[in-house]
Length: 214
Image 1 (spheres, one colour):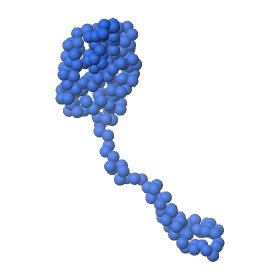
Image 2 (image 1 turned 90 degrees about the vertical axis):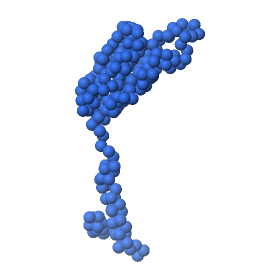
Image 3 (image 1 turned 180 degrees about the vertical axis):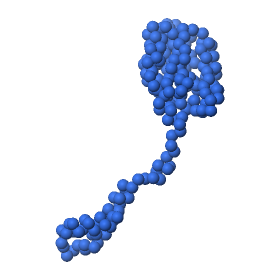
Image 4 (image 1 turned 180 degrees about the horizontal axis):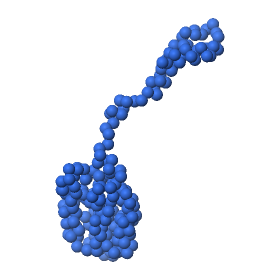
């Protein structure tokens, strides 16, 4: 194909190449064909690159559509942050995995009750089997400084993803976390927890207070 184009260039532009005893028209024709061939090659679809790129899994495709409306989550969070109506909020994915919703917003100050809710959380796998499930949570920590300099509050975002949860739920929760976290202004600390030991109160408060709690 490129040879025909090269011939057209030479036929319709008799002045190219310019008449000169030092210019070999056949040699220039070969160079034109070579140039056009290079251009044609660069414009060809790179099919091999597409084959090397794995197509996204259905779980990842769904994760991109999970965020949905976060109005309910933001309202509950503001009630916790501004009105101190709640001590903690637990967020989950809806049953169809298309939206983040409030699972529970509670004024209960008992840390163990909150911890048990995370440990006992469940989620469905692709096959419909129910197993351990991830969650997001916000907890309003309040603690006394060991120095005696008063009381501090820190809003903490907890991403709970137990090691024994299903792969698909963990993937979707991990992919959707940033959308929720960005909508919750004023978060002071973020914690990633994968094991019940990670959410023991003494362990958490050391991290949240940076070792300053009394």
